[in-house]
Image (cartoon, rainbow, N blue to C red):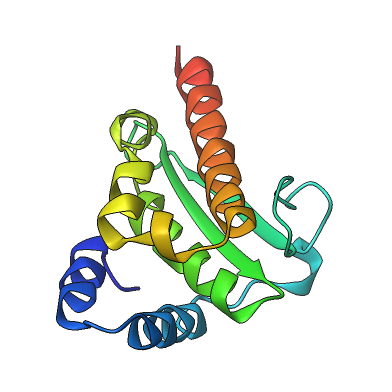
Length: 142
């Protein structure tokens, strides 16, 4: 999986938004396949125009919980946005998730000016879902 720093570096190399869109779509193609059974109502993210699913996996093998995700979408560009969200949050502790400001990262990438309001709302819905998961995992840990 591509790291958020690698994505940031690649975005800096791409001057044109057409190239950036193509890159986002390519990121979507790198997502780990999500089992069809996980395309369920429980995993579906509400608030997205396209269909988006996030499957949460909690790894407690080292004590503190680590939240890992698989994601998918029925739209190519959104699948790429899912890949960016997962690069930012998957494999992190609940506290790291809560301390990470995804909107600042998305603004740094220029998404505010280059995504439709519906896509921006979908991104926020994904982030809110993951932050809710992190709050729940923290509450369960104590």
